[in-house]
Length: 295
Image (tube, rainbow, N blue to C red; front, side):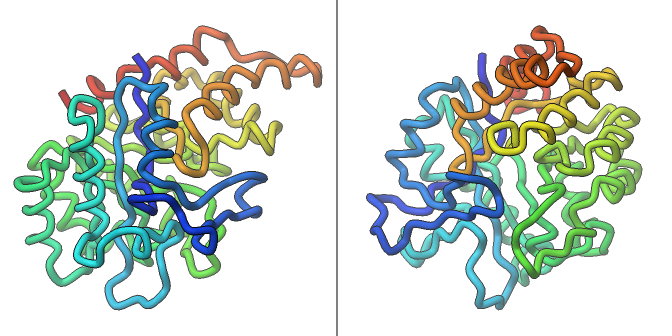
């Protein structure tokens, strides 16, 4: 069973006009920031289950989100409506997560709508992009609700290519404080907090309610970084806390699986220690649905 815990909503419901196509070479060669519903379904055909979400914009902020869905969907729909629509296409496969901004004026009303009307089963927060302190009172208010309702939270962690993203809000050491304050809140640290692998491991191994996902592992364009991160997780004995995720549309599930399985070729070519194949296959086939309580 392959579960992709990290997929973004398609930026376009229909075919993408050429002028809307976006990519970012700072992230990596061939990385796309746009995708249609048809492309999403085609890419995700490889997996058995997938979590889908958008990123809530900053209230009143004129700049588009890094993956701008606003041109490709009806104006009355927000990121949560789109996630729910994608999930409705294959309800036994796709699981919608909401995304909120902790300081949006209707945060409680939108939370209730997402959970009770749209059927969202968790939340994705990108607090560095959203310019929000995860230790602030607004964020803690949201975490209390999530913990009470037993809904998992995924945090964007690590690097960003957006000039105005505050990296300090995406550092895993802050997640240690969140996990201490909310010991029953299930937390996922996206991207293994690349490039802060060691800090991610330090936090991850001490909290039973915390996992990382492998989405965006840079094995296709920064082989050393990808191998080094995975090798560190292996040496600390915490690869069993890594969940499979692709980061679609930036990377597809096929890209991610091939990249994981290619790490030992890179290691062999450069006379580096290998990573046990069983641990790599364990990541690819981990039952994240059961782990996160999403049944």
